[in-house]
Image 1 (cartoon, one colour):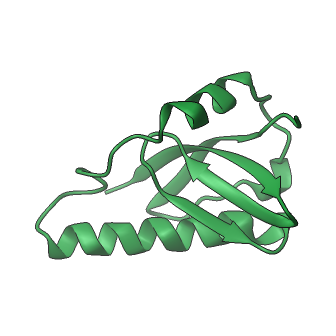
Image 2 (cartoon, helix red, strand yellow):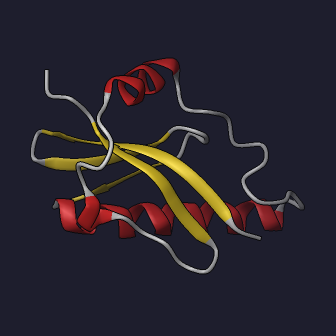
Length: 101
């Protein structure tokens, strides 16, 4: 089963944060280069928990809170081309950098 997700990335107090949009999954990293790997690990962990609960994929994990969807919609495409991530099972198909305040 292939999982494809959208996410928004932002920096807060020197920590990079990636917030899933389709599913409320979040990860952090010390730098921009590691953020998608951290997010992939969080997705894999959620997939495993769901498997143990007898659920398929990321079912049962709610969408991100509305404030993150709003930030995502205001964000630009393609600002992190070096940070795209894809494995055989996980694809971040729409990764956006949040606008600065």
